[in-house]
Length: 244
Image (tube, rainbow, N blue to C red; front, top):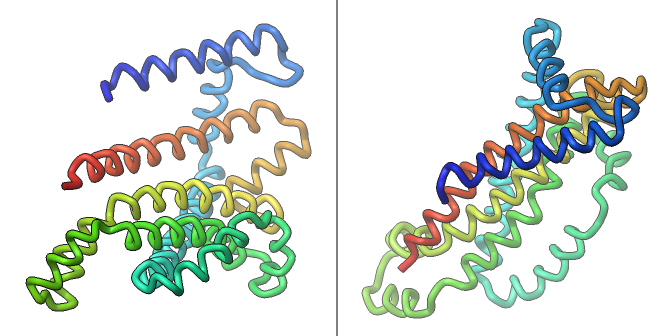
């Protein structure tokens, strides 16, 4: 994809934002320029940066746990077809449960603070990563499996030469989905049970009806999520194109 295409999309979104601001006014919106200035002022405030670090630390830990646990669940279930067929409806049912309903339990187990935010972020990302990893292993080309048996590859050789290259593109797709959900989970954890972090600041701004801060924080989060998602999407497409 050419670099001009996403740039053109960003320009269109900002034009729509400006038009909405002109239609609605200062009651519910601020202009993109005003929001950018407000975000710049926030980033220049030394009191704001600890909240950014708090959110990043919680998110990175939760996302890492989601990836590791998701792969540990999904890969064995994909290799054991019968176990995977039994577990898949259970995982889909867990995925459909609104995670906010589990937050009181998370608070009781982990308390208010960093552990609860990490756990809530991880819970959001584990199931989709597990499902994608399970299907990635399950859908490996049978020709590759027969070739491995004919060549009598060892378990380590099979994993390095067959399993990982064939399943990695689909696993990366699951990681990309898990990234977005883990970020949402971390922010929700900060909004409802924390005194620090971007989610806490966002909840505080909403309670005070501080439109400038709400939009500035939202712009920062959208820019971060879009940037990382663009990198993961590029890796995802590259891996899918490289498939034999």
